[in-house]
Image (cartoon, rainbow, N blue to C red; front, side, top):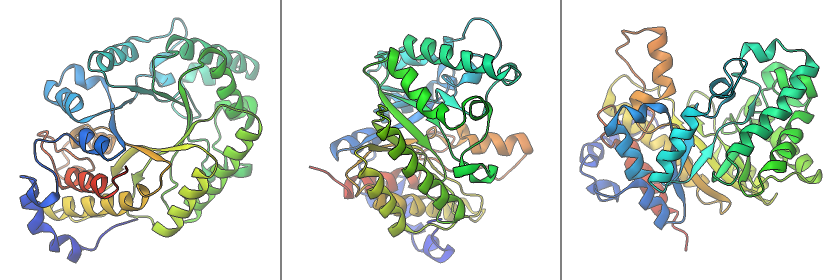
Length: 365
């Protein structure tokens, strides 16, 4: 997907060294990526985990560069309800306080997902799970009503690999309600929160293969069904985990974006990064290819007026979930992922400048 060739990467390496100073990339080194995005009509932000409570340099990246923050795991069911008994809101509350202190809007991620559901909930009977579902939504959404910029009410409803009718993702909520769990989640949330923007968040749409096309088709159909049912749905999140191992067609993806926008919803790129495991080991070449991949994608996406935000999935490479996965597999691994705009020393990479340049080129009046 969107990969440049090794030759193309090497051709832009000369600029990559200058990029550290910023001159060649159209953005002054002192500028904030959030400021650059905002002045051109976009929101830029990132997912944020509890590590900011310990890593002060990393926390400063958020206070400097983000204009919106998404909870990483703080508001997932596995964090809030890891076991039976009182809910655990401490992590989410601390992140919300951080955002409030720095006047950064916060997005909730994610209320309902068929993955990462604690085993004690999966072990419930269907009727018990249905009761829990309703009560959980009302308690959690009610606690943060009016305090969030937006909520990912349902995350990743589709996964064609499960072979379910319509390409839906299977799991405990699908088992309990069928596909109606999606509409039910939005409706229950709307009972207790009248202000927050409600979002349907999905992955894999960037892929121009059987999986990606099936997810796109399913997502458009689902948006139509929810709107026909009168569901309050104000935005659709497309995660934007770019995976160059898969094909990507910018023209067809743009057609999908326009079709989605035609439903009257805003579009957020909610989990932006570039998977680099198919790129060369050489760091300079790899960083150049990551930057080019991202810029090609953003050049297409940011032309669509309905696209309002680009939100990275963390900010620095060492805190990427890709890095976590590699280290779990091999704690001594030497080749670590570099999918984000800052490196593990919190320094800007070519990706930072590519994103800044994409925002500048897409300037909106």
